[in-house]
Image 1 (cartoon, rainbow, N blue to C red):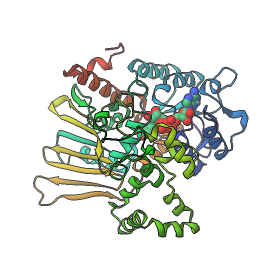
Image 2 (image 1 turned 120 degrees about the vertical axis):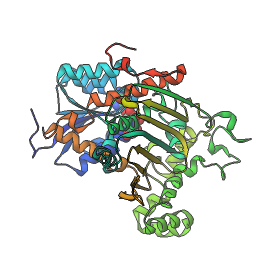
Image 3 (image 1 turned 135 degrees about the vertical axis):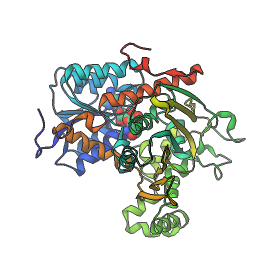
Image 4 (image 1 turned 90 degrees about the horizontal axis):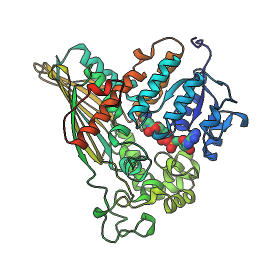
Length: 474
Ligand SMILES: NC(=O)c1ccc[n+]([C@@H]2O[C@H](COP(=O)([O-])OP(=O)(O)OC[C@H]3O[C@@H](n4cnc5c(N)ncnc54)[C@H](O)[C@@H]3O)[C@@H](O)[C@H]2O)c1
């Protein structure tokens, strides 16, 4: 049965971390008429409490773990369940929630195991439940425009699709060297963890399923042998390279310098001036900050990535986290094993090819795309510091700018909230999950593309995709 337009979709949350609390929780607070969280599960007391208080959830509906939330004693509490635990903890809560009758918003990747991905899809079909996988980029104005342009035929038939995922040095260092996604065994191969979004876009924009894949990649830079002479285990232990090292943890997490630097490249002059001032006049900022909370937030950076390292965002709390936790470790000695660059090429029906270049050594965070057709080319960039799409026809004299947007520091360029807007429409029966685009079947294709790419890289061979779509393991 669909939810009435006037009433909000009700939901339970498992995993009140960065995505659960800061993205979907934030959506509910800003859109009380659309989404309301009635229960939460998280073993981390501070995170659970923070979510509970923000959403007025009574103690009786705040659980220490998804196991209790979905236990037989608790019936089905709401319309939907949001599964926002870490990658290797999606499968069991997702299955339990489906069995209880919840529709799901399921964080990507569905699971690091192909069999588990399939089992979740099979359970959803059996229980007739809807699953929206968080491939949020489909819900941005930028990628919708790219899709519309390709579908319009303006550049003719697509011959080659070229997609670069440039992960900035600081974001890669934070998430894939020091953080949650640094080891394949405890998270996923980087092409699944970081790029299943991007492969989903390739499949969607080209409008067909790939036939085969080849891939190569390595962990080249973030390795112990590249540490400067005399670098200690932790940045906080008196590193001689503190000034020169872009990954020096106190600068990254205490002052938010890498994030402020993005402002230096913003299209707006005012933003550039403010970023420049924040970086170079910290003393004056210190004096003025007595009168402004947002200036205090700049001086003692309290947003991503600092918000991930501890819940005590005071300078003392953050320093303690850097001295004791994983985010203060030397970037070259963090015990990481995921690749820091990988190139992957897909062959599509009709001879179209698509490449994905992923790397973690970019000065600016963002994606760059070039789509070469038989009549023209689409070029675009989708970065924190701005977005633009141009179309150049073979017979045009100039490129036409067809889309432009300014600075968007996070939120995936509007995709995070766009995805939930779409889920609400699905729940209200205003669109079907497949039409919305992030249903489990569409999402599975991007997962097959990732698993096959890893098999191709490891086996140093071209891998056909067909067998990944069969029900048995390849
Ligand atoms: N869609 C996107 O663009 C996007 C972006 C970043 C991360 N992600 C994915 O979102 C997921 C969550 O990422 P995050 O950064 O929010 O992680 P996080 O570590 O900040 O949050 C996960 C939370 O799960 C909680 N948890 C652990 N065990 C639990 C249990 N038994 N029951 C309930 N909760 C439990 C943890 O305490 C933690 O608070 C990951 O799968 C990640 O890959 C998606």
